[in-house]
Each structure stands twice: as structure tokens, then as C-alpha cells.
Length: 226
Image (tube, rainbow, N blue to C red; front, side, top):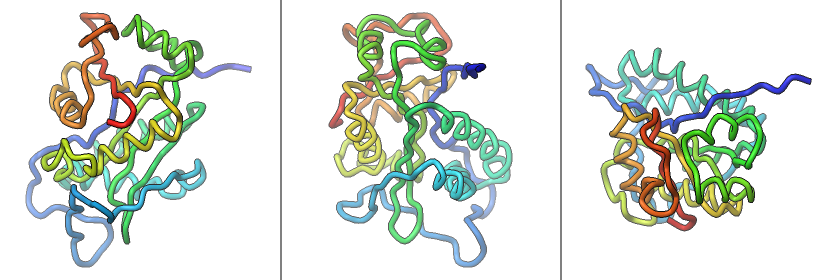
């Protein structure tokens, strides 16, 4: 049996660009109102099975395009690249995707556990050492591979526990009993790193979780409950 070796996955956040003209929305009819970033009760978070992810793939891609600005670039190039990223991660062992929804999909986050060996970790161990490697060997490390939320969630109430992105990432780690969440961000994408830090993430080199430098990625870590 041949094992497919997938490369390290960088975290996917909507690639925000200034919208040109009127943003496109899902389907026809009245454009949807942007989801609020501060839902004390509103959005219900639950997990999708792999088959449900496949059934709702186009809807997931639509929300990504909307959150990216809604212009033609977002609906074509960015959306297609994102769906490829999501499909690759969905094949990984232990993959999990959580959605938040009220009457419509309002956000989602996904990832997978990382062990001390295997096709994914074999592509990642060149970028970290120390504490992260020990947690991976104990199978207590969870890779947060994508967080898709409306732009307002990235701008407002980012340090509040009920911020939708924080709710999603916290639930992902809790569901898997992870000791630590980890994400890779391309060094050419400081905006994503800044957004993650506003949601409680920190660079893995801030303490004993030493990151290898220089390299193509920034390694960020997230403590459970953040």
C-alpha cells in the first residue's frame, strides 16, 4: 500500500482584498447581512461528518469567497485554491470541521491531530523543535488548519471570549483533548499572523517552544481555553 505524503499545511484565513463594486452573495435575492462578531448566544457550533463536509463543500467555499471580499478574484482564484486546501486536509487522519450557524452558515474552523510520526509530521518537523515535538510525540498536538469567519470577526471584539473565531478554535482543541494548538503561517503573510495573535495565539519561539529560524513559515501556538 502506498502512503500519500502531504506537505505541511499553512493556515487558511479568508484572503481579504478591497471589494470592487457590489459584493456578490450566495445565491440570488437579497444580499445577506454580515454576521456579527459578538454572538453571546446566537451561533450554534457543531461538528460535520466527512460526508457532510463533502455535501456542503460548495457552501463552505462560498462563505470563504464572501469573507474574502466578494470580488471576482475571491470567487474564482481564491475560492478554488481554498477548496483544494480543504479537500487535502479532509483526507488526513482525525480531520475535524466545526461550523457555526444560525439560520445560515456563519463561520467554521477545521484541523487534525499531529502525531510524532506519519506523513504530515514528516513534513513539519523541520520547522519546530523542543516543546512542540514532545507534545506531538505524545499525540497532544492539534493542527488548526483553517478558520473562516466574516471580516467583522477579524476587526471587532477580538479579545472577547465570545468572538466567533475564538469560540471555534477553543472548541476544536477541547473536542480533541489537545494540550496545544499549532498553526503554520507563510512568512509572506504577516496579516494572518497578526490576526491570530489578536485571537490569543503566540509565536512558538516566545518561550521554550522553540521554532526553527529562518524558514518559510511562522509557527504559532494556542493554549486550550484561549
